[in-house]
Length: 252
Image 1 (cartoon, rainbow, N blue to C red):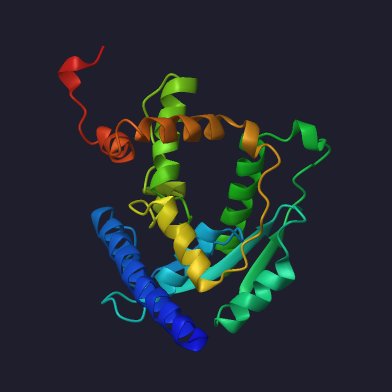
Image 2: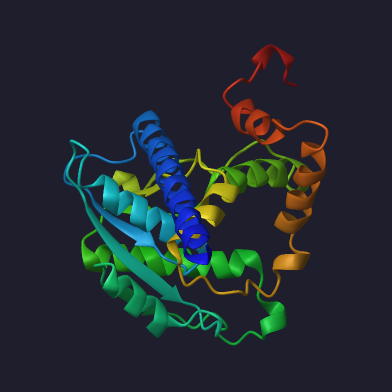
């Protein structure tokens, strides 16, 4: 009886995996098409933090390369910020088993500062710089981030509430005169989807986060959105689409 239940559970999990993976892949494909993210011959550097989102992105982009009409290459890179919770050896071994070589670029995130002085901007700026350097070294013209729909929505509200400006984390951004493009293929994918996929795939996701994560502005906005969803379930989609529906006659 127990073996039958275990077998049925595995079957249900496999069905769910196929459905979810197909759905996420379709959303990624739609985002790529809508924002012209990937073209034939692109070499894409996937910024693998070790978290669920970047690992899901790496797998989806790799899987899609086998059947989409455009040809592109995917390279995985981890920027080592010195946080002990990410076991680089475990991550590299896991990706090796999946057919990926993990490139690692180590940077000194402190650079004379104490942990208490490290801000989100400082960490992000240094990581971004390291990614640009790595893309040049590895001959990549695209850098793919695992930012999803939730990240973009949160950024829109953060910029509005804390910076007094209307702007977003764009799905595609050309830099250095178009020599490199930053892309976010998970732009239409929700965090709950990457969480479930990562769990089903058994990704070795670390159970720690940024030391400033719980007290960050992003955390405040995330909680705010969660509260709003109880009243308006479509709030994330509404915020996401708002910058595509600007009524100029009603702006100051």
